[in-house]
Image (cartoon, one colour):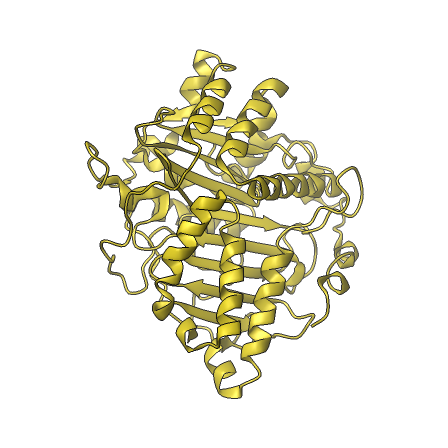
Length: 435
């Protein structure tokens, strides 16, 4: 297999956009709030505005969770000690709060059971502007906000998040719109009060990086999350050499190439040969999500199993599945990561791997690993700011979900002494107006 360096490193530069067209000349004059307001008022581009309206409709549904058949499986998740450094995380959160005015604290904080957990989104548009935006904080407060992430995530996970943010800043520089897209154009929202004994959490979201963290004592649910990059490499400037998502890409391709050696196995795994295949049913592809199924506002989607069960793979192939999942769990501290990986491995008898697209060394592709306790997706995309009409390997979207009500720690909440299991329900038109 060719190394990743042979594909997609500097290729994106031939797809740099014409910055003299109205889309960019207008964007370059706006801040993030003006940019979002203009989008919502004008409805342009129409396809994206329609998607936004659809997302808001999905938000009105009570939370159920991702399922494979529409039925939520019970008793999959349990309270336990994962060794999360909760004292350090709470101290970091309180240190951040000490930098804020009462008004900022009120803007930042929502009830632990607020449905606004579900209103994160990954476009550059501020479709749901809640909490505090890091690029609007003073440097000390911004550093304190990032310290919450650093305390919660593994060291390598924190570096991955910083890399995604820096790549977003690099894209903002490429299109000369740094007030809309920059290294700190991310919103932080607090749900509940930081506590070593009671449940609470936070959402950190913006273009190509969205992390939802639910904390209870020494247990962490980091789900759903979304991480992407366009391009996925910084090739100039102070952060030159920064790259993300190449390991998820290389391991997935290695697995598929191994499976494709047997034509009968390949036929089961490769559910569509083309990334936009004529055989796809209506709705299987859309311009924003393209092939991935479980992005923003898709909290209740039914995603049937597809592809090949991991139990039918060889030992080396199963080892590659573990390696892929370890990459997807990299945001978690080591002890928590090991616990979650053990949970996933117990369900290898009901874990499926599927593939869309080619599997040559330079091909763009999609894959998904899905079981009752985890769902991860990888997708190469066509250009949003870059001009490539076909998916290329320098624009990547990845995500992780915890099916059967596991997202946002919901499956754990009814197990916490004194807590009542809640439904995240959108309350009405007045709440929509707040956004």
